[in-house]
Image 1: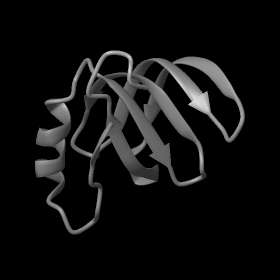
Image 2: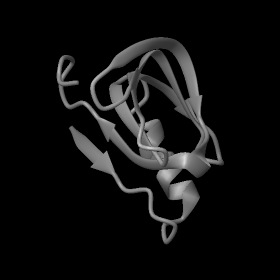
Image 3: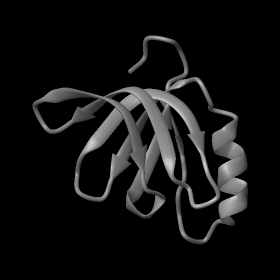
Amino acid sequence: MSTLPTTSQEDPRESVRELTGCISKMARVHISDGRSFEGQFLGVDGHQNLLLAEALECNQDTKRFVGLVMVPGKYLERFEVARGPFEI
């Protein structure tokens, strides 16, 4: 799993360009409340809002199917992309 940085020091437009190269890959998104989501990365907008399809919401010990999910960029802490099709 490779991680793309999401620090406030980066130009958001550069982050968006990096993320668009990951479209259709399996990804894991970690958010500020401690949850993470795993699913197929569909896209990102200029505010770094992410869209995942066939997503699972992951807590410490449980996974729950949530389908299509939009993660607001303001809650994004880490974004990881699977290198292979079955890595997540």
